[in-house]
Image 1 (cartoon, one colour):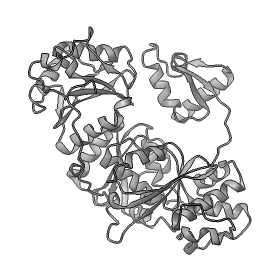
Image 2: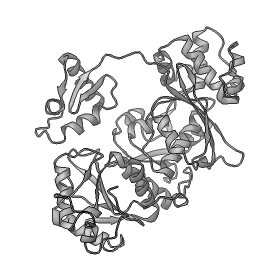
Image 3: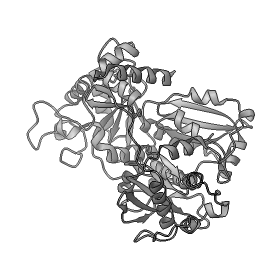
Image 4: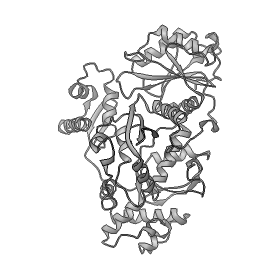
Length: 489
């Protein structure tokens, strides 16, 4: 149904021939009478649709599909030391950006390297090509948990598929399994006379050389993309006969953030995961099985059922996943201790994230230097709370140093508090946030926060008291609140 709705909107934009306001689309296709929340709701539907583009805030138009270039992108290989198969944060990734002019300087590091977040942004900016897609996926999932970052949404393409596709294009026999497992042998197997990329060696050089050969064969990667996504000629479909759900059930999963759980034949939860898109992520477990899918095949042979919980935001999914893994300790999950990574001091803050489930709703968190809490919102728009209730929650939490809950507040366990604080640090520029150092009373802070959300404040904004207080006042004026360390950040 969601796909039919998206296609109807796409068809309407194509026929319109000009930009269409999001409010018109929401009224026509979503039966949303009020324009409030129309922008965010339409954006949640069309943001992943390449044929539609938001040309101005709140206005959408149809764009003819363009040729899909191979570059820019990144190539990555993963090294796993013996004995560290279940500790992905210790795996070494070797990463090289690649453009039409050739590869850039390579990087080698683990999840504990100081510039890992910067390299993850590189991965997010374009497609990632790798001969080890399953390893890379596990490495990125560990990064999301340890570093508390959003799910990497850029596509990940397995270069073993590219090798098969290239052989089919060149009408030559497909490579033997032993060759596919050894990227350093790929240039010789292809009979390439070109020198290896400068500054690269071993598996990374072989992987980059293969990618460049693919790009020389055809500048448009659409045919490879179709080949890779269909599993054409490279595996057997998953048999759903032993599951209590069907492939059609997977296609009915919501396209929202959430937590999913796989359950074995003894009715035990054996794996808990989180995602920004339940339908897309869960479906990845049921792609065709290949010679390189032995771990996934063993996993699928064990499960019988699944359950899922749609949630307001990806942060909510990250918190719930962490809680369930810590308490249930499912045997297929990697037990990651988040406290071994320094989270830093965010000061005294509250921030809001637009809800993925309800237009005009927000999910809100309180932060101190030592902890975090989630605001329990009501059923109405915004926070669904009266200003006096929000002010009381602010006062009870922050005046107690983050130790006192209230009827509208749930204090998070230390492990999950670290994740929330780190999420705030890495996503600060995209959040709606308030610094209590700049308010004279709890009521004025609550009023400003509620007004900003009701007014559709955009992410990245700092909410301030009006008029702005002179320097030296602020949280000192909110009796009992701890100081956040100065500044407006």
